[in-house]
Amino acid sequence: MPPKLALLEFKFEDFEGLPSERGQSTWSEELTDPHGNAWKLLLYPCGDRREDEGWVSIYLCNSGENDVCAKYSFIMRNASGEVHTESNREKATKLFKAGGDGRGRGKWIKRSEILDEKNNILLDGALVVDVHLQIKEPSSLHKPPSSLSIKMLQLLENMDNADVSFTVENNLVTAHKLILSVNAPVLFDFCGENNDGSPITIKDTTTEIFHIVLRYVYGEEIPKSATILNKGKDIISAADRFGIVGLKLAVEAILVESLVLRINTVADWLPLSESK
Image (cartoon, rainbow, N blue to C red; front, side, top):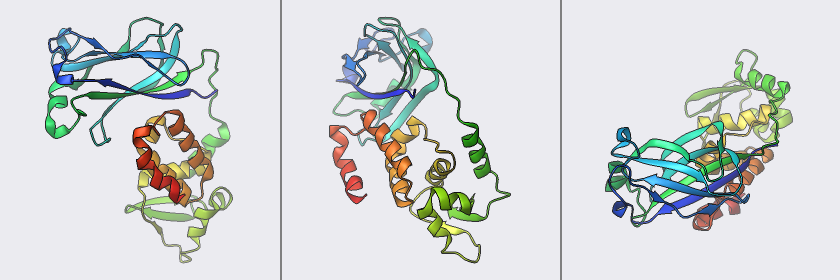
């Protein structure tokens, strides 16, 4: 069973006025994720331990009644909505005991970096922290990727047998016409534009996004959630352009479930949805 996703937005008003001595802390308000779990952030504006002095320490705490197994990461954006800092802790699933100690970072970001006006981090004086969660059902079992998907992705990475190539941002990307003809017919149509075998130039996307598209075409690989949160618009745009409907729907579903399409971001997404 795939993990349940959630994105919680915590806000600490008047960050500059919060306790500014090491060891002093403040709690966020309690937020409930879409799956019924309650969470709070414990913030030390000037560090938790002696070695953390001058840093902001941050810990995610399960304030609900049930234990939760989850991967998590802290995301700080500037006032323009761009990611300034992301502490990716999603490599291992952690147990959050109900009412237990939090998990997080003693040295998350320098306090001075937050207060520096040129970084434009504070929003009307408030520090906003996004917490991304991948919640795992306690009874769910790990299901390894299918051997076929693994072998297909290995085929993509093997340039020796490739019979078509693309140029994206001056980088050469190779593929196989047979795979494209079956799994990405719209992208396969691009191959007919160059009958002389020269690389086909792909514009209006990046090498990273084009690789994401191809990895889905070959192995139905969904990008990591952190990548989707940061580059979801670009992935959806490329998937739509090349006719990769499954990838587009998967990314849209993750963004919706992660609450990225919130009220304050709907206006940014409307032009994209209306053009597809």
